[in-house]
Image (tube, rainbow, N blue to C red; front, side, top):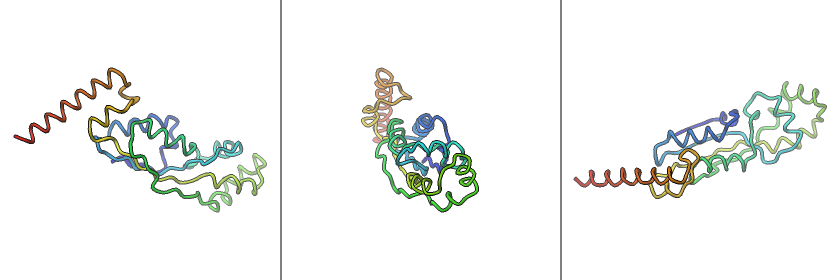
Length: 167
């Protein structure tokens, strides 16, 4: 199992993080992630986010984030929980006051925009069986001939295990 709590969105190359998680998991392994994502991208949010160093700093759009997980090869990607980021903790903090003053952002506008920041808990599985692996066009394997070679060896290994278990 690979577990992450609000750190993947700090990576500038989130796709590579999910690809590595897929690579290190054994077949049938599970990914569990909690991260902050954006429901909508407001132009003012990019000004605010660029000034922050907390989990929100690298937040992606929710749909883009989920697509990265699926593109890495995970299946059964499921949102377990989606919670609005606590407005009070951000709006009345010292960092928020500094950002509002620097960019002349009214408090009302900030209160309108911040509900689009949500905490997302997501799970996904690395496929267990070779047949499931053969359906993927995974960035690490490169697809095409490499995928067919991987599929051949996975099937061979799987069949050998079946034979050994029968002995």
